[in-house]
Length: 266
Image (cartoon, rainbow, N blue to C red; front, top):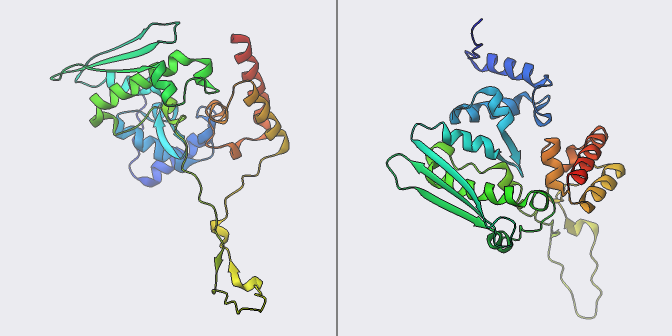
């Protein structure tokens, strides 16, 4: 039997395929029962040259933006017809002067070399940050150097995508606080008290900051995980969910096992 080729003829067939995939245990948790998200990921992956399953395993949404895992990013470049080589090294390993170096060679161009050092990480306030930067600091240095080098050399192939490992370090834009807007300016006459009624102030519900519904058990668990070096982004990435409010009680056993494995590996 030859390889199975999936090529939907129209949008209806594509959505039928995505619905079947969304109900499968083979897709990451973040795509379960979300055929629309699967269609978006598969479409983006196809533009990059990835197959459907490669797209679902390699593309993740972090802080509301699509990103691609560092190993998939490297794979895309290595498979590009103009890529001659990608060389990655760690210099001064085991010292506070450690430096990750990535050299990318593209046919017809001068080799591009990008580095990311401990000093760079300190300036970006990443060094010592709880989570991957504490557990795997050299790996994170390598991902930063790799991301800069690959995007600078193969911008046409990567379409500006950042690696998932980098995206987790970028803060989301702060939510603007709701401000009370007076309907009418209150006039004050000297010697007379000013009376402000409830109708004088209007606050739109859409301007109020959203508050995710998170159970006390999950909040306590998150506080514990943070105390042992697992920040919210680490938890989100491990569970393959998009945000904290998507964490359910059934995820706790998974997180406890992950926390134990991290502790034992140190």
